[in-house]
Length: 516
Image 1 (cartoon, rainbow, N blue to C red):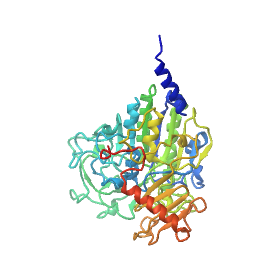
Image 2: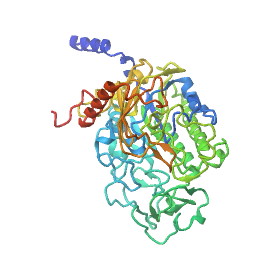
Image 3: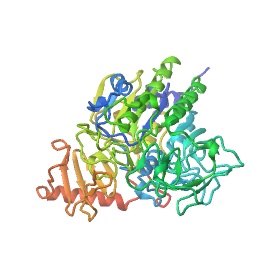
Image 4: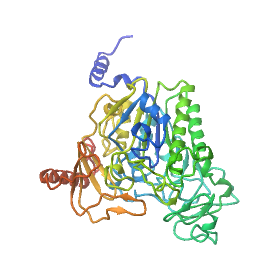
């Protein structure tokens, strides 16, 4: 057959121009394991000594351990929004921590990380905690629950609607409440009680698993009081102790069903979010109480996935990524001895703050990447990477170019993610109660009137009446404010942060509909 000379030239030029052409011919299966509230210092491979995480350590040993990886926010829903859309959540109203009955936050049909991979013929699945809203205002939980993950690029899903401490306490499988008896319809309210059923506040004597320390004193399900009110749906209620087993089995089932084709699995663990009620076989595995035991349970879940990849001979052709949606919190609403038994353990490692905080511990989280066919084992990277970069990064991995009106804040960091470069993004807006700015090793936190400390959670929030500037290369714990010594640097970073906030994007190639 006679070859088209122009096609030959085009292929040759593409091969020269793209250092990742070798990846495109055999793009990997992608398994993204997203933990909840895991801090930088909660894993052995990041320095923890009070808990053992052998399966996560295996990922680090066989792959790449990032030391400057970040969630897009210091709280859950905004991080998950940004990861899927490539847009900072603070650019959109209604993207704060979602209630259990929130409508879907991301508009149906919007291009997401999942739909980008779907476009490259990946089979896409979501298992575990969702917390991005479902349905529309006033939706009934007793019929089809949509829009949902299917409308954002996931071919199938089995999800926890919000969090374990929020009603409704049921699983949603492919747009339906799993195991629902239609003769016992579900009702949900976050405004007022639905009936005269006892609550955690009125009948604390009925709480036999854990009791609230602040809030979390409404409907009682499985001996635990939650946020919000719920009635009905008794046959569909989850069992907290078996939650990790249930969602891990669903994740493994998805892998097995799709082993003969490329797939993307978004496996969103609920551990170690409250209420921390692990399976009895993990009870007492650490000296830190339920929080430590939940870390061990999470590590077991990861091991189950890794073992299955081995058994199906999928390890070499699969990229496994592990990270967390925000930094750690010790007391997040229940009396589970987490504070009393923490001992010398430092959940955020060398960093200050944690979940909800403007300090580095709010978004600096573990980021492990293993792809045996392409990543050198046992390596470490200091490149600045954020989960918001996944849409642009995986578009490139699968030979696509991110459209100019997609992912306004998503950068292609594929070289850094796979350890082929020590250079990631050049800046990052860290999102908590404030917007802070990282540029290289400098961190700028603008002045605010917010409270500096949350006594309920025990978290330093990083608020101050004065501007703050830290050199993280010398002071990772943000203990020495350099603002008064470097006024020009403060002015420079303040101006850059303002420019990013006033714009509708930070990715240079991005063009909104109004710019076209």
